[in-house]
Image (cartoon, rainbow, N blue to C red; front, side, top):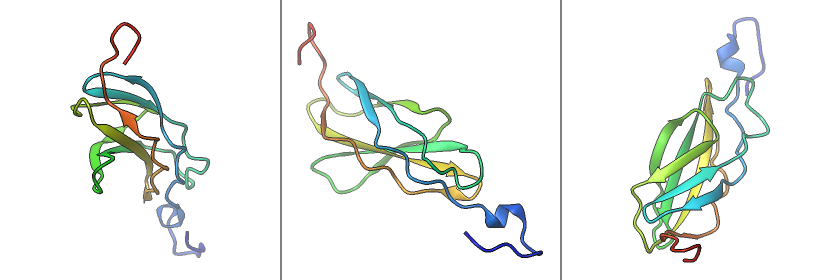
Length: 118
């Protein structure tokens, strides 16, 4: 964040949002995972416009973008592969840009539940 002087516009003095809490996994299916999270404690001085959700297989190093236009604090990541362990993380975006990513979730094994059991 910059110090304001008479030539600064409001857009110039806004900061990026803080980091949201790690997402919580509420439902796991064979090829999807439902996530929810809390907004960051700091919005950087402007409303949160959207969230970016990323995921990666635990055995991989590279994060993949699931979406960057979630406007709520819930999202279902689809198209992942059954039988693999994944981690998920989120970042908030306002007019100043995208803030840091949350801590990732614990490892989640993507597997269909059968009769209440995995």
